[in-house]
Image (cartoon, rainbow, N blue to C red):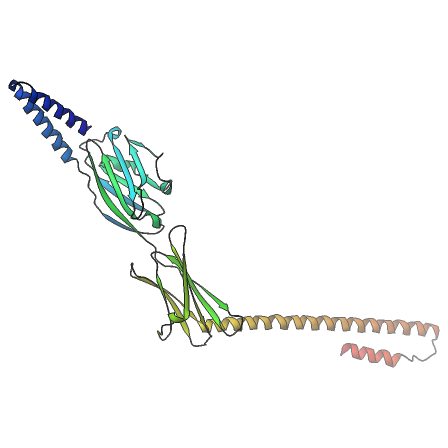
Length: 331
């Protein structure tokens, strides 16, 4: 609109110059109008209270640029455009667009769908606040803030995303020869970290390790480092992830004493399983023997009673045998 008015003024000015000198008053009027329009445009300036934002991966961030409202805001005249421009990318990504007071999301880049929003309640204060949730590594870069409201201007802000190697997962495995063990450390972060290994005497063991990494879909480095060693009861091993760009160090420790305790606990568990099993087997066998003895003793008494009925005057020849069985039963 401003350019059209300036072009019209140029045409009027040219037409005035081509006419008679009596129209000099019209030329002066046009020049004054042009100076006034330029002054109005110069007064509209977009500012940024903060040029650099550094946030943690997975967190939320709000970036803003400010513009003059000059009284109450006429939302229908306001247009706001936020774009991301990253080094190495051929095209910019449209993060959020407000056109004539209404959200225009049809051209929003798919990376920001559902994550980027413009805080509407801040616009009346002359603040175009962009909020991005669940920040990714790919969100890092330069962001253009363009405001068109009774004038137009833009500014750039920079977003840096860091991902510390906070959580280190450890795992212990035994080699097939039963004499060597593998200590593994794994973690995710950004940018690429260097992994160091050392023992309790701070002796560098990195030369005996194997470290590999892959890149996740979110742009994080998934680093795995493996140290192979023979167990020693008094040894402590440490793996350290050093993020050089962030100057951060994160470490994890493991003691072979705990490793040997694990082996002892396994043996102890095996013993505790075998002993009760043997006791139960012994109890069952004893119960079976006692059951057979009792059955044999009852059969002996039955035979004795029958014999007495048939031969009341005959001496019981199995009496001593039954008594011996009774004694054996109680034993």
